[in-house]
Figure 1 (cartoon, rainbow, N blue to C red):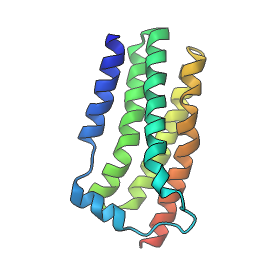
Figure 2: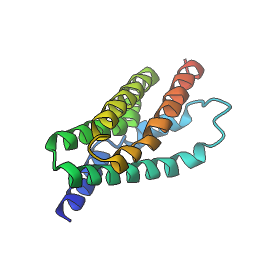
Figure 3: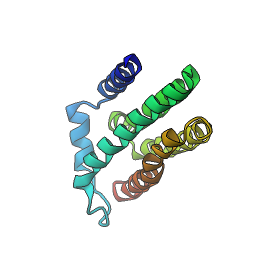
Figure 4: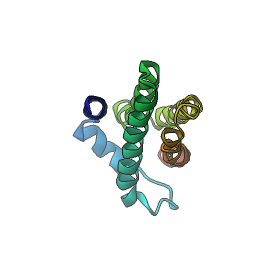
Length: 148
């Protein structure tokens, strides 16, 4: 029970700390998007689902291993994922988003490889992020080209 609360609090703190300012986010919202991005309104719901999977995966990993190293791996992934929008907005450079998006996906793959032998359910809960992350990175890459 304590682990569940601590993991949730850490996720909330990271989300709060790496939330872009209103002005920075307004800049981001004004950027042109690829024409094929017809599902943008669903992206917040997709991310809520992915964060729920992160939470459940971390909790299952902790229950299986009590490994602080794995928790550090989850924290690293969370920091990379949450810093995507913050970094783009803060630096006003979409290239940074493409880079951090790829770095987050690579970290997620590495974490999944480490988690898989410890807990199959925890590993499976990382799959939504591993599938979605390349889509987000591709959108950012396309946005770079549209907003030069």
